[in-house]
Image 1 (cartoon, rainbow, N blue to C red):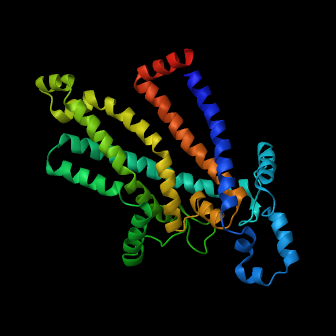
Image 2 (image 1 turned 120 degrees about the vertical axis):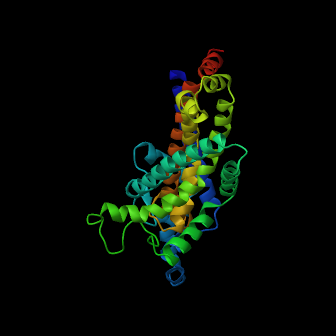
Image 3 (image 1 turned 30 degrees about the horizontal axis):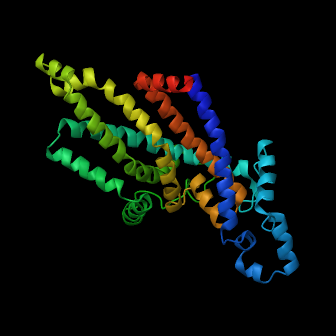
Length: 330
Protein backbone atom coordinates (compact mmCIF):
# COMPACT_ATOMS: atom_id res chain seq x y z
CA UNK A 1 0.00 0.00 0.00
CA UNK A 2 2.90 2.35 0.75
CA UNK A 3 4.30 1.82 -2.73
CA UNK A 4 0.89 2.54 -4.20
CA UNK A 5 0.66 5.85 -2.34
CA UNK A 6 4.27 6.82 -3.21
CA UNK A 7 3.74 6.04 -6.88
CA UNK A 8 0.47 7.95 -6.88
CA UNK A 9 2.12 11.02 -5.35
CA UNK A 10 4.82 10.92 -8.04
CA UNK A 11 2.15 10.75 -10.73
CA UNK A 12 0.33 13.59 -9.00
CA UNK A 13 3.42 15.83 -9.22
CA UNK A 14 3.73 15.09 -12.93
CA UNK A 15 0.01 15.75 -13.34
CA UNK A 16 0.36 19.18 -11.72
CA UNK A 17 3.17 20.11 -14.11
CA UNK A 18 1.24 18.85 -17.13
CA UNK A 19 -1.96 20.68 -16.13
CA UNK A 20 -0.17 23.98 -15.57
CA UNK A 21 1.68 23.74 -18.89
CA UNK A 22 -1.52 22.94 -20.78
CA UNK A 23 -3.32 25.89 -19.18
CA UNK A 24 -0.57 28.33 -20.13
CA UNK A 25 -0.40 26.98 -23.69
CA UNK A 26 -4.17 27.15 -24.19
CA UNK A 27 -4.38 30.69 -22.84
CA UNK A 28 -1.44 31.80 -25.00
CA UNK A 29 -3.05 30.53 -28.22
CA UNK A 30 -6.46 31.89 -27.24
CA UNK A 31 -7.68 34.86 -29.33
CA UNK A 32 -8.73 36.66 -26.14
CA UNK A 33 -6.70 39.77 -25.38
CA UNK A 34 -6.43 40.05 -21.58
CA UNK A 35 -6.05 43.83 -21.72
CA UNK A 36 -9.13 44.37 -23.87
CA UNK A 37 -11.17 41.76 -21.97
CA UNK A 38 -10.47 43.33 -18.59
CA UNK A 39 -10.65 47.06 -19.33
CA UNK A 40 -13.65 46.88 -21.65
CA UNK A 41 -13.96 47.58 -25.36
CA UNK A 42 -14.96 51.24 -24.98
CA UNK A 43 -12.06 52.07 -22.66
CA UNK A 44 -9.67 50.04 -24.81
CA UNK A 45 -10.69 51.90 -27.97
CA UNK A 46 -10.01 55.30 -26.36
CA UNK A 47 -6.73 54.20 -24.79
CA UNK A 48 -3.42 55.47 -26.11
CA UNK A 49 -0.93 53.00 -27.64
CA UNK A 50 1.52 53.75 -24.83
CA UNK A 51 -1.06 52.88 -22.19
CA UNK A 52 -1.98 49.66 -24.04
CA UNK A 53 1.68 48.66 -24.18
CA UNK A 54 2.13 49.39 -20.48
CA UNK A 55 -0.91 47.30 -19.49
CA UNK A 56 0.23 44.48 -21.78
CA UNK A 57 3.61 44.52 -20.03
CA UNK A 58 2.06 44.59 -16.55
CA UNK A 59 -0.36 41.76 -17.36
CA UNK A 60 2.25 39.76 -19.24
CA UNK A 61 0.42 39.48 -22.56
CA UNK A 62 3.51 40.62 -24.48
CA UNK A 63 5.96 38.31 -22.70
CA UNK A 64 6.91 34.99 -24.37
CA UNK A 65 5.05 31.93 -23.12
CA UNK A 66 7.95 30.09 -21.50
CA UNK A 67 9.19 33.19 -19.70
CA UNK A 68 5.74 33.73 -18.21
CA UNK A 69 5.46 30.07 -17.22
CA UNK A 70 8.94 30.02 -15.66
CA UNK A 71 8.16 33.15 -13.63
CA UNK A 72 4.81 31.75 -12.52
CA UNK A 73 6.24 28.31 -11.63
CA UNK A 74 9.10 29.87 -9.66
CA UNK A 75 6.65 31.95 -7.61
CA UNK A 76 4.22 29.02 -7.28
CA UNK A 77 6.71 26.70 -5.58
CA UNK A 78 7.37 29.51 -3.08
CA UNK A 79 3.66 29.73 -2.23
CA UNK A 80 2.78 32.70 -4.45
CA UNK A 81 0.03 31.68 -6.89
CA UNK A 82 -0.10 35.09 -8.54
CA UNK A 83 -2.73 37.82 -8.72
CA UNK A 84 -6.08 37.50 -10.48
CA UNK A 85 -6.67 40.11 -13.17
CA UNK A 86 -10.46 39.81 -13.07
CA UNK A 87 -10.87 39.91 -9.28
CA UNK A 88 -7.85 42.12 -8.53
CA UNK A 89 -6.90 39.89 -5.61
CA UNK A 90 -4.40 37.10 -4.87
CA UNK A 91 -5.36 33.84 -6.54
CA UNK A 92 -5.23 31.96 -3.24
CA UNK A 93 -7.71 34.39 -1.71
CA UNK A 94 -10.14 34.02 -4.63
CA UNK A 95 -9.91 30.23 -4.47
CA UNK A 96 -10.32 30.21 -0.69
CA UNK A 97 -13.44 32.39 -0.90
CA UNK A 98 -15.11 30.20 -3.51
CA UNK A 99 -13.82 26.72 -2.70
CA UNK A 100 -16.19 26.41 0.26
CA UNK A 101 -19.27 26.91 -1.93
CA UNK A 102 -18.06 24.38 -4.49
CA UNK A 103 -17.08 21.79 -1.87
CA UNK A 104 -20.47 22.13 -0.16
CA UNK A 105 -22.31 21.76 -3.47
CA UNK A 106 -20.20 18.76 -4.50
CA UNK A 107 -20.51 17.09 -1.09
CA UNK A 108 -24.30 17.32 -1.04
CA UNK A 109 -24.59 16.12 -4.64
CA UNK A 110 -22.09 13.32 -4.02
CA UNK A 111 -23.93 11.97 -0.99
CA UNK A 112 -27.43 12.33 -2.44
CA UNK A 113 -26.57 10.86 -5.85
CA UNK A 114 -24.77 7.93 -4.22
CA UNK A 115 -27.58 7.15 -1.78
CA UNK A 116 -30.37 7.50 -4.37
CA UNK A 117 -28.44 5.59 -7.03
CA UNK A 118 -27.63 2.77 -4.60
CA UNK A 119 -31.26 2.47 -3.51
CA UNK A 120 -32.57 2.53 -7.09
CA UNK A 121 -30.01 -0.07 -8.16
CA UNK A 122 -31.06 -2.50 -5.43
CA UNK A 123 -34.75 -1.87 -6.11
CA UNK A 124 -34.29 -2.54 -9.83
CA UNK A 125 -32.32 -5.72 -9.13
CA UNK A 126 -34.96 -7.09 -6.77
CA UNK A 127 -37.67 -6.32 -9.35
CA UNK A 128 -35.58 -7.31 -12.38
CA UNK A 129 -37.63 -7.75 -15.51
CA UNK A 130 -40.63 -5.95 -14.02
CA UNK A 131 -42.00 -2.47 -14.70
CA UNK A 132 -40.00 -0.90 -11.86
CA UNK A 133 -36.76 -2.29 -13.30
CA UNK A 134 -37.57 -0.92 -16.75
CA UNK A 135 -38.50 2.48 -15.31
CA UNK A 136 -35.25 2.72 -13.34
CA UNK A 137 -33.15 1.70 -16.34
CA UNK A 138 -34.98 4.10 -18.62
CA UNK A 139 -34.56 6.88 -16.08
CA UNK A 140 -30.82 6.19 -15.86
CA UNK A 141 -30.32 5.99 -19.64
CA UNK A 142 -32.10 9.31 -20.14
CA UNK A 143 -30.08 10.99 -17.38
CA UNK A 144 -26.80 9.63 -18.71
CA UNK A 145 -27.43 11.43 -22.01
CA UNK A 146 -28.84 14.65 -20.54
CA UNK A 147 -26.47 17.65 -20.26
CA UNK A 148 -26.41 19.04 -16.74
CA UNK A 149 -26.64 22.65 -17.92
CA UNK A 150 -29.82 21.90 -19.91
CA UNK A 151 -31.38 20.14 -16.93
CA UNK A 152 -30.39 23.08 -14.76
CA UNK A 153 -32.13 25.51 -17.11
CA UNK A 154 -35.29 23.37 -17.05
CA UNK A 155 -35.27 23.23 -13.25
CA UNK A 156 -34.64 26.97 -13.09
CA UNK A 157 -37.60 27.76 -15.35
CA UNK A 158 -39.97 25.31 -13.65
CA UNK A 159 -39.11 25.55 -9.95
CA UNK A 160 -37.82 29.13 -9.73
CA UNK A 161 -39.64 31.12 -12.42
CA UNK A 162 -42.98 29.30 -12.69
CA UNK A 163 -43.48 27.84 -9.21
CA UNK A 164 -41.26 30.20 -7.22
CA UNK A 165 -40.14 27.47 -4.84
CA UNK A 166 -36.44 28.33 -5.04
CA UNK A 167 -34.38 31.49 -5.63
CA UNK A 168 -33.23 32.31 -9.16
CA UNK A 169 -29.57 31.93 -8.23
CA UNK A 170 -26.62 33.02 -6.10
CA UNK A 171 -25.57 31.50 -2.78
CA UNK A 172 -27.30 34.02 -0.51
CA UNK A 173 -30.19 36.49 -0.70
CA UNK A 174 -29.45 39.79 -2.40
CA UNK A 175 -28.67 42.53 0.10
CA UNK A 176 -27.94 40.10 2.95
CA UNK A 177 -24.40 39.85 4.30
CA UNK A 178 -22.74 36.53 5.02
CA UNK A 179 -22.89 37.28 8.75
CA UNK A 180 -26.67 37.74 8.70
CA UNK A 181 -27.42 34.74 6.46
CA UNK A 182 -29.27 31.89 8.17
CA UNK A 183 -29.02 28.16 7.56
CA UNK A 184 -32.43 28.27 5.88
CA UNK A 185 -31.16 30.88 3.40
CA UNK A 186 -28.11 28.74 2.65
CA UNK A 187 -30.24 25.62 2.15
CA UNK A 188 -32.74 27.38 -0.18
CA UNK A 189 -30.00 28.73 -2.44
CA UNK A 190 -28.07 25.46 -2.41
CA UNK A 191 -31.05 23.16 -2.97
CA UNK A 192 -31.73 23.57 -6.69
CA UNK A 193 -28.08 23.46 -7.87
CA UNK A 194 -27.47 20.43 -5.63
CA UNK A 195 -30.61 18.67 -6.89
CA UNK A 196 -29.55 19.28 -10.50
CA UNK A 197 -26.06 17.90 -9.89
CA UNK A 198 -27.43 14.97 -7.88
CA UNK A 199 -29.98 13.93 -10.48
CA UNK A 200 -27.37 13.75 -13.24
CA UNK A 201 -25.02 11.70 -11.03
CA UNK A 202 -27.48 8.94 -10.17
CA UNK A 203 -27.28 6.94 -13.40
CA UNK A 204 -23.83 5.34 -13.10
CA UNK A 205 -24.13 4.20 -9.51
CA UNK A 206 -27.68 2.91 -10.03
CA UNK A 207 -26.82 0.83 -13.11
CA UNK A 208 -23.62 -0.50 -11.54
CA UNK A 209 -25.38 -1.44 -8.30
CA UNK A 210 -28.18 -3.13 -10.24
CA UNK A 211 -25.74 -5.41 -12.07
CA UNK A 212 -23.79 -6.24 -8.91
CA UNK A 213 -26.99 -6.87 -6.95
CA UNK A 214 -28.28 -9.25 -9.63
CA UNK A 215 -25.01 -11.21 -9.42
CA UNK A 216 -25.33 -11.39 -5.65
CA UNK A 217 -28.99 -12.43 -5.77
CA UNK A 218 -28.16 -15.24 -8.21
CA UNK A 219 -25.18 -16.49 -6.21
CA UNK A 220 -25.13 -19.87 -4.47
CA UNK A 221 -25.01 -18.53 -0.91
CA UNK A 222 -28.07 -16.34 -1.56
CA UNK A 223 -29.97 -19.31 -2.97
CA UNK A 224 -28.97 -21.33 0.09
CA UNK A 225 -30.23 -18.56 2.39
CA UNK A 226 -33.54 -18.46 0.53
CA UNK A 227 -33.85 -22.26 0.76
CA UNK A 228 -33.50 -21.94 4.53
CA UNK A 229 -36.64 -19.80 4.55
CA UNK A 230 -35.30 -16.26 4.33
CA UNK A 231 -36.98 -13.89 1.91
CA UNK A 232 -34.93 -12.40 -0.91
CA UNK A 233 -34.94 -8.97 0.69
CA UNK A 234 -33.92 -10.28 4.12
CA UNK A 235 -31.19 -12.48 2.64
CA UNK A 236 -29.85 -9.50 0.68
CA UNK A 237 -29.77 -7.33 3.81
CA UNK A 238 -28.10 -10.01 5.92
CA UNK A 239 -25.62 -11.54 3.48
CA UNK A 240 -25.39 -9.52 0.28
CA UNK A 241 -25.45 -5.86 1.29
CA UNK A 242 -21.84 -5.82 2.48
CA UNK A 243 -20.76 -7.05 -0.98
CA UNK A 244 -22.54 -4.12 -2.63
CA UNK A 245 -21.75 -1.13 -0.41
CA UNK A 246 -17.98 -0.94 -0.81
CA UNK A 247 -17.91 -1.31 -4.63
CA UNK A 248 -20.57 1.40 -4.83
CA UNK A 249 -18.49 3.70 -2.61
CA UNK A 250 -15.38 3.15 -4.72
CA UNK A 251 -17.36 3.98 -7.84
CA UNK A 252 -18.60 7.15 -6.17
CA UNK A 253 -15.06 8.25 -5.36
CA UNK A 254 -14.04 7.59 -8.96
CA UNK A 255 -16.92 9.82 -10.13
CA UNK A 256 -15.54 12.93 -8.41
CA UNK A 257 -14.25 14.16 -11.79
CA UNK A 258 -17.73 13.95 -13.30
CA UNK A 259 -19.30 15.71 -10.32
CA UNK A 260 -16.75 18.52 -10.46
CA UNK A 261 -17.19 18.90 -14.22
CA UNK A 262 -20.93 19.07 -13.76
CA UNK A 263 -20.57 21.63 -10.98
CA UNK A 264 -18.82 24.02 -13.39
CA UNK A 265 -21.89 24.08 -15.65
CA UNK A 266 -24.39 24.09 -12.80
CA UNK A 267 -22.67 27.01 -11.09
CA UNK A 268 -22.77 28.98 -14.32
CA UNK A 269 -26.49 28.31 -14.85
CA UNK A 270 -27.47 29.27 -11.30
CA UNK A 271 -24.88 32.08 -10.92
CA UNK A 272 -23.56 30.14 -7.95
CA UNK A 273 -20.26 31.72 -6.81
CA UNK A 274 -17.97 28.71 -6.78
CA UNK A 275 -14.76 27.61 -8.43
CA UNK A 276 -16.60 26.61 -11.61
CA UNK A 277 -18.02 30.06 -12.18
CA UNK A 278 -14.64 31.63 -11.35
CA UNK A 279 -12.98 29.34 -13.90
CA UNK A 280 -15.37 30.52 -16.63
CA UNK A 281 -14.69 34.16 -15.70
CA UNK A 282 -10.94 33.52 -15.77
CA UNK A 283 -11.08 31.75 -19.13
CA UNK A 284 -13.15 34.46 -20.82
CA UNK A 285 -10.86 37.16 -19.43
CA UNK A 286 -7.50 35.55 -20.15
CA UNK A 287 -6.73 35.42 -16.42
CA UNK A 288 -4.06 32.74 -16.67
CA UNK A 289 -2.94 32.88 -13.03
CA UNK A 290 -6.45 32.29 -11.68
CA UNK A 291 -7.26 29.69 -14.33
CA UNK A 292 -4.04 27.78 -13.56
CA UNK A 293 -4.76 27.88 -9.83
CA UNK A 294 -8.32 26.61 -10.24
CA UNK A 295 -7.13 23.90 -12.66
CA UNK A 296 -4.56 22.66 -10.13
CA UNK A 297 -7.15 22.61 -7.33
CA UNK A 298 -9.54 20.75 -9.65
CA UNK A 299 -6.85 18.23 -10.49
CA UNK A 300 -6.29 17.76 -6.76
CA UNK A 301 -10.00 16.98 -6.27
CA UNK A 302 -10.02 14.47 -9.12
CA UNK A 303 -6.74 12.88 -8.09
CA UNK A 304 -7.88 12.55 -4.49
CA UNK A 305 -11.08 10.84 -5.58
CA UNK A 306 -9.28 8.43 -7.90
CA UNK A 307 -6.59 7.63 -5.31
CA UNK A 308 -9.25 6.89 -2.70
CA UNK A 309 -11.07 4.68 -5.20
CA UNK A 310 -7.85 2.77 -5.98
CA UNK A 311 -7.14 2.23 -2.27
CA UNK A 312 -10.69 1.02 -1.67
CA UNK A 313 -10.44 -1.30 -4.67
CA UNK A 314 -7.45 -2.89 -2.95
CA UNK A 315 -9.50 -3.27 0.22
CA UNK A 316 -12.41 -4.83 -1.69
CA UNK A 317 -10.25 -7.22 -3.70
CA UNK A 318 -6.83 -8.03 -2.15
CA UNK A 319 -5.81 -9.63 -5.44
CA UNK A 320 -5.55 -6.13 -6.94
CA UNK A 321 -3.16 -5.05 -4.18
CA UNK A 322 -1.07 -8.19 -4.51
CA UNK A 323 -0.91 -7.72 -8.28
CA UNK A 324 0.37 -4.19 -7.83
CA UNK A 325 3.00 -5.34 -5.34
CA UNK A 326 4.18 -8.11 -7.66
CA UNK A 327 4.45 -5.69 -10.60
CA UNK A 328 6.36 -3.20 -8.41
CA UNK A 329 8.84 -5.92 -7.31
CA UNK A 330 9.32 -6.98 -10.91
